Amino acid sequence: MNKEFAKMCYFARLETGLSVKNASNLLNICERQLNYYEAGQKNIPDDIVAKMTKVYVNPELGYEYLKQTKTGQELALPTINMKGISSRTLQLRVCIKNVIDVLNKLDIIACDDVIDQKELCTFMDCMKQIQLLSGACVGIRLFSPIKKSALTGTARISLITSS
View 1 (cartoon, rainbow, N blue to C red):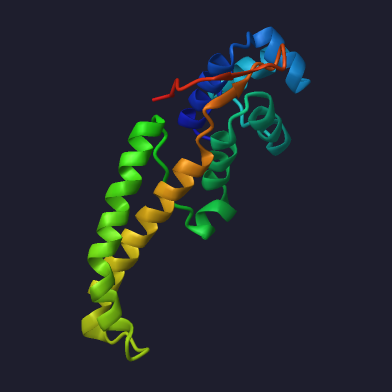
View 2 (view 1 turned 30 degrees about the vertical axis):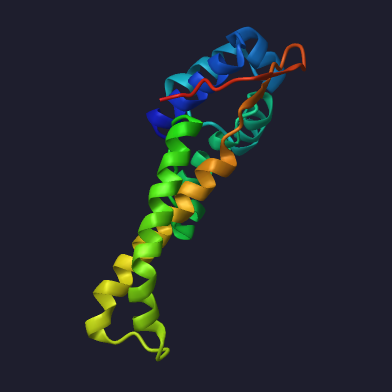
């Protein structure tokens, strides 16, 4: 995994309010191992990432982890905005507007069920806008304003975002 993902894991733990000691206990790993993972010095195993997404109440970790795998790259998962809910909502609105703008072009291209060579570039531009919309939708879906304290099990509303 890369250093960016390791940094995401670090900030996800901090956002949840867990110390290294508490998080490592909940993840069933030693503190040193968690430090290695968060520093990007060792790859994080799949099962630990899965536990992190649950313990840190952060589904974005799982999504970003999957994006970096060979399977995730083959799926061409859309990039999602990791900022706050207001930024994600604005991005969604802009993407919806852009897709609406290209729908007429897409209708003209698709009406004969054939994409010929002269239409291909325009078609690919339309698909790019749809892919961006898909990423904006996933970003809204993955955003969780409810963060649970792994220590107490109590829920709190949090609009704190990681940059």
